[in-house]
Length: 185
Image (cartoon, rainbow, N blue to C red; front, side, top):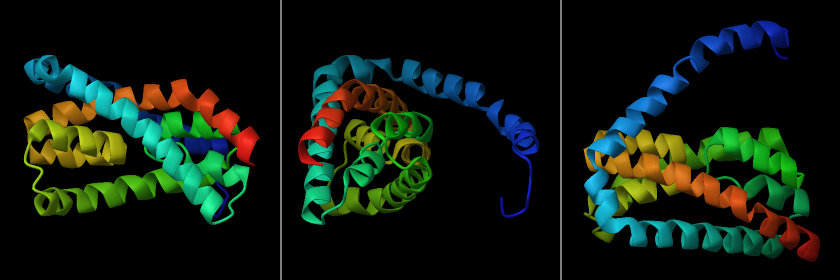
């Protein structure tokens, strides 16, 4: 809108970037396959941690919104902040959130998570590569996965796994978020 670029022209330029999504996804899958033993050895703690993390995240966003007297639109906007943008926009839209603000919050969450995670791991003495990867992928989604890949092969594989599981879990419990919206807002 600022530069008066028509949507069709913007989409044509965006398709150049979109063609790289499939190869990037395949690369993440290869990392996961190469580190499948870590997943096999830790699948119960990984799934338990991710699912309980999403449930706790939902409760914390609800508590924050109630504490500072946000309305239901802002709850719906903030709820999907820790999943990848493509999924977050759909979840926000289905709950009645503000999609453009959701995108900004998702990007901010990813940047902040990727920036502070290494220092936080050091401070909290979290040295396990599986835990680091799961934390980065579930909390800071794609940007966290980029940082996880920089940190190591295992971290990158676990982070890419957690993006998928966290996204699916948020989508699956979004009907619960909708019930919370109707009850509290």
